[in-house]
Length: 378
Image 1 (tube, rainbow, N blue to C red):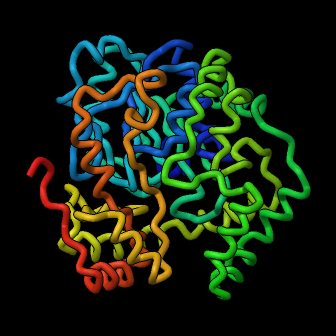
Image 2 (image 1 turned 60 degrees about the vertical axis):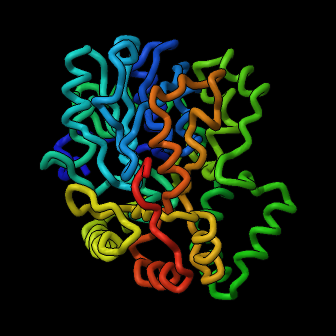
C-alpha cells in the first residue's frame, strides 16, 4: 500500500481505530469536525470518542459526496478538521476540500474504507489529506485489519506508539474463531441457514442491530461524552459489528489479510466490471468516472420493497445508512446539516448493490418492477 499511495502506512486492526488515531493526533479535544451525515453510525461514535463535535455537512443528492460550495462560511470558521467518507467508493471532492482546508489551516482526514481502489483528480483516494484510513474488511473481504496512511512519514513511529497503547492483547480463542469463520459462514450459506442463524443470534443477545441504526441510548451516551476523549467509555457503540476492532492481530489474521491484499488488483477489476453493469441500469446515477465501487448506490423509489425483493432471492443488502446521522443523533450529539434535504433523500432511496452480484441484483429489480427514484426535489 505504501507503493500504491506513495505514503507511509501503518497497519491497524480496523479502519475505525485508524480514524480514532488520526482524530486524536490532529484535532484538539473539543474541536468540531465536518463529516457526512450519510455514514455508518460507528464513525459518529468514533468522532465523539475522540472528544470532538460532529458537524454534519450538506451533500450532493445523487452520490452523497460532500457539497463544498454549500458549506456556509460561519461553519468553516468553527472547524478543527474535515473528515471525508467516499461513500461506497464514490470519491468526495478531495482536491477542493484539500484547498479549503489549507486556506483555513485545518487538517483534511480521509475515510477511505470503501475506496481502496478509487481515484479523484488523477490520484488515488487517500493521497490528499494529512492522513487517510483504509479497511481490509471491505474490498478484500479479510474481515479484519486496515491501515493508516500519512503525508508526513516522520509521524509514523509516533502514531505506531499511540496505536500500540490502544491495542488489546491477542487472544488464542479469538484467533481460532477467526480462522474458522470463513468455513462456518460457507456452511451456513450452503445449508440455507442464514435466517435461522440470525434468529439464534437475536435469541442469544448477540444481534446488536435490529434496524439499520444501532440503538442510540442517549442517557448512556451523555455519560460517555462527559468522559471523552477515550475509547473505553464508547466501547458499547464503537465495537458494534466488529468486536475485535482494537485486538492485537495474530498470525492467522495477518496471513489472511496479506493473502487477500495480494489479490487486490483482480478484486478491483471485478468490482469495476460489476460497477459498469450497474451504472448502465435505469436505477443508477453515473459518477464522473468509472470506479471499482465497493457498493453501487442504485436510487430506487421504494427502497425497502426492493430490499425485501432481494432478500427473497437470498441477496442481502448491507451498508444502508438511513436516517442521516443528524436525524439519528439529534442536536445533543451533532450539529445538524445546514441543508439536510439531499442527505435525507439519498438515505431514503439509496440501495447499495454489490457489484460482484450485479447480474443477480439487476434481474431481481427488473422482475420486481422497482421504479427509479427520479430526481431529488422532483
